[in-house]
Length: 287
Ligand code: AMP
Image 1 (cartoon, rainbow, N blue to C red):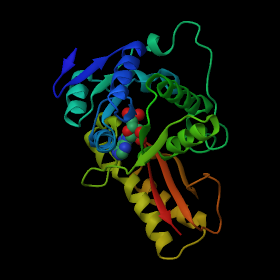
Image 2: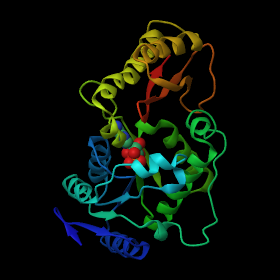
Image 3: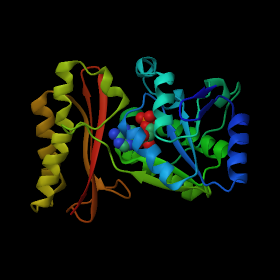
């Protein structure tokens, strides 16, 4: 199957391996952009960056069941492969790997990658330990299937990027990890495939996440060094909007551990349920 812009869509590991093998034989650098589809500018920014650095860009599209803690979230996750293929082609990708679940998790599948430490707070606590176990396992498998020189991830999922970096270091995957900046709507809302599920009134309330990050950042840059004061500044924006807060954290950007008084590179991270949709966002701030 061929989509516009000479993008090939493949479903099997064997097809991916032979396409990558041929590209490598032509001397091309291989880039991988792992995704769950329903593309927006955030995904496309990763693909364009990959295209700048790599002659052959593989985009994987797989809504990975093992990283969903909520079956309703998995069932309602937006999907549109035809649209995604056209967008990936326009961003310069050459191969879209869109496997069925059975290709990734054959019957009797029983091996998982479990990263400790950075997986435990924030998303790990809110979604349970199986979430990052699912993420690390599927990304490890994709690295083994595609064998990319470089893999591209978004800062939007800051904790996920840290987990992948840790896994790559600890297990000696021969892949370079690049983390690209969060792409936002003009009004500040971080782009997410889940945003299409926001009702109009929730779309407005969802802006409280980026407002909370701005408030925290203002607090830090004007000299506040108590983590809890900064947390409360962010929290009050979320509470004012009436969203259901999962967490607000101000932590070390490299370890996600507590730093008090605040110092160095910090990650301000928020998660909240806005109507039926759970959203996350974060900002890197220097103290
Ligand atoms: P997903 O399809 O949500 O699993 O995301 C696939 C990749 O795109 C992940 O590395 C995400 O961090 C990244 N991504 C998602 N949203 C954004 C965004 N708004 N800006 C930059 N990268 C993003």
